[in-house]
Amino acid sequence: MLVEIAKHAAFNPGAAPRPLPQVRAPKTFRHTIDIYLKDSNAYANTYFSRYFEWQGVCRERWFHQCISADMLQSLGVFVTKRAHQEYVQETFPFQAVDCQLNTFNVKQCSFYLLFQFMVGAQVVSTGYQQVVFARADKRIQRLPEHVIAKLRDYELPTEARN
Image (tube, rainbow, N blue to C red; front, side):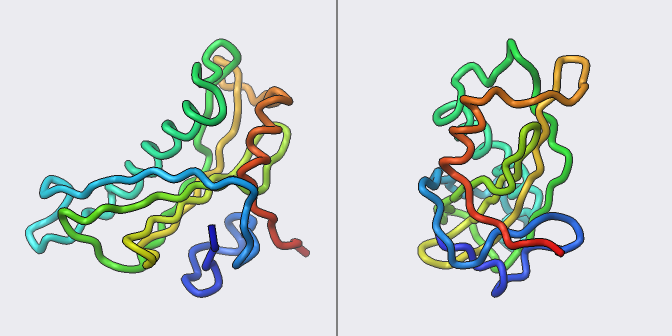
């Protein structure tokens, strides 16, 4: 997956670390979403809120298929600490939107997810989430080592911060 962060300015440098532009991860998860009339307004533009919804859909599908089918329910919960979505180009009903998901800044208790939504070869939206792993009582805890290893398979390198 090529990340076009510099071109699209999808990240606020003060808000989150940034993946390096134009770098590939060992793996990228892909999920296709079809846009329907219910997803659009009277002008046939896709509602911006759908992209946040699609972040969740892609995140759940990726986690279930690639990380842990039981979603680690017996060990803890995932809490979204931060989320952002940047809109680049309009989309319309009956287009297929391909979501590409990668991780970055994987740490012991948290990680970021990067979402790139594309129609054909055109980036239409980018976003990210910071996800924290916690116990059922919402106290932050370490991710299991085998999960961290799987998260790193999808990780993009981040730029050095001063």
